[in-house]
Picture 1 (cartoon, rainbow, N blue to C red):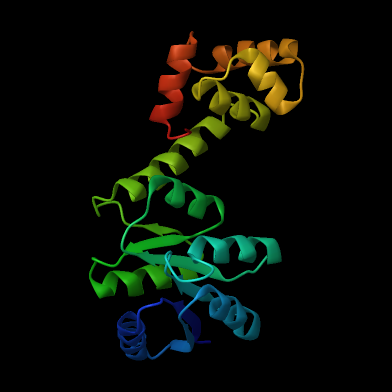
Picture 2 (picture 1 turned 90 degrees about the horizontal axis):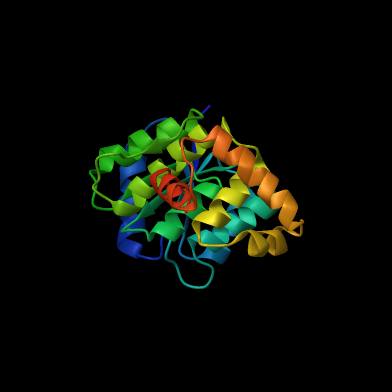
Length: 212
């Protein structure tokens, strides 16, 4: 079975380059080249490809908007972001929306092919040596979240994030629609589970793990 691929980028030269790159791969079937978010979503619905190569910044619906719609529609297509750069908040949202790979446009083309094949095989591919602050944020967030999820409940994790952003117990309680006493109990459990004993320590821990 061929690897069924759709690519989306608003620059014609980039689309031509992608067409040539994957045209040399005998087991890859390039189904569509899209120039904006609307075309991308239409191609996903029409072809249901295995992998989508998606630029973040496109006219109309950008790449993140496409990812949000894919999440809403429960689209099974796996996604590789191909981008000139990402802000930290964009990188973290992309991971939360299910992106399985990120490649910077400055990288050699063979790494994009490698990334697509890795993602198609069901694995993740994030270049650790790109020097990109945003990609490092992705990796830090993933690794940190994985570590903390073994220790904390989802509600405790929410409270850690809010506390690390400077929320007091009352504001956390109001935000989560629980009592202040409940927040204090959760904080007590958090302090017992984590190697910290103060709000400052909690904030530093959360930043180290990439949670805020």
